[in-house]
Amino acid sequence: MTDKPEVLLQPELGVDSCDRITLHFTANHQHCGDNPTQFHNTCSMLCKEEAQPYDRRDVVLKPNQGEIELDLGWVKDIVGFVFIENKTRWDGNLQPTPEQRADIDARFIRVLIDGKPVFRIENGHPWIVMLDKERTSKITLLAMNGICKVRITAMPR
Image 1 (cartoon, rainbow, N blue to C red):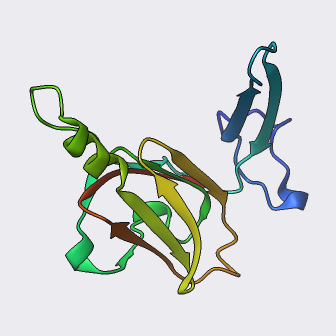
Image 2 (image 1 turned 180 degrees about the vertical axis):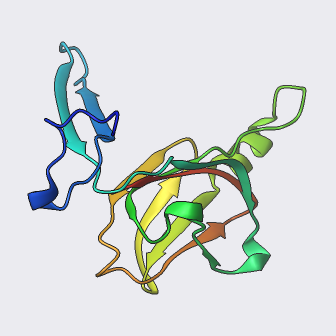
């Protein structure tokens, strides 16, 4: 006997799980002197696989390491979404000088899919992608302009 609600299981669609991913997107744009315009969207989907998300915080990327293959942990063969956030920040106890701030702000992460650069993640920004592992064989990350700290979260499809 299973504890899963039968109404959520959809084996005819290849969904044998009642696990769910819900995404909330909110974006605001404000033109100088105007009220902000907001876009908000929410979507939810059943997972095809049962697995805990794989989450790694403060992964350190160094420019001299070259391209590093993205570690997707135990969901590597069943990954659906990947969230990557550039968490590079000033680690000193004092306020950074303008030069130190400029150095930190210049660091970014280059994302390559199958060897082709597809995106750059600026300091303090996230990158979210829905992956089709049947079409994507390799994702690599490359630290640019200095050491970068990254948070990587991979969710099952």
